[in-house]
Length: 183
Length: 67
Image (cartoon, rainbow over all chains, first blue to last red; front, side, top):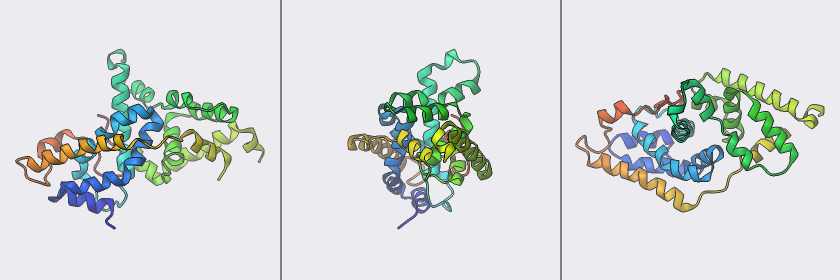
């Protein structure tokens, strides 16, 4: 079976339709990435934008990387940022960095989908309280099943930094869970 | 697998998308594929003007630049 890298390279060399196979492989995962962070309706609205951006940017993809999923998550992440930025009204924001921080916070949506279990509420609160940089790595690994190195690729940080952030985040979560702490 | 990890996965659980959602998104892609095939640059070539404005990352090691 051709790797994603091979298909993307082929799509750049006279067979743009080959990109559709890459989409077919990852559409469920990318939709879930969007839905976890912005809800099902926004995911439905934004999925096509991810494909359009990915197709437009495929010329720079390094075909040596067989799995395009981290690359696609990186694009999806920025599509989400654009979405949140637009929906919150950029005119009200003066600090670009503060906006970016707020825009990448998925917990408003997540809290609404929590069940009534107190344990999950505690966990959600603990995750929400994490620094955004640590939370991003944690959720890419826990939710998207990426390795720390792949999460680093999504975020554009060194793999060692991703591992450190993941370690810190997990330590905080263990402290937030009395049972886990005692175990 | 520790419990915090299992619970985190629970927090991230989402429903499978309606097939129509996936199809609608694919149609947006196919519109771009068709546009490229019909463009003067020729099939398979990303027009330089579009490369210049697209800021998505080429390499998985790099996150996409902010739009």
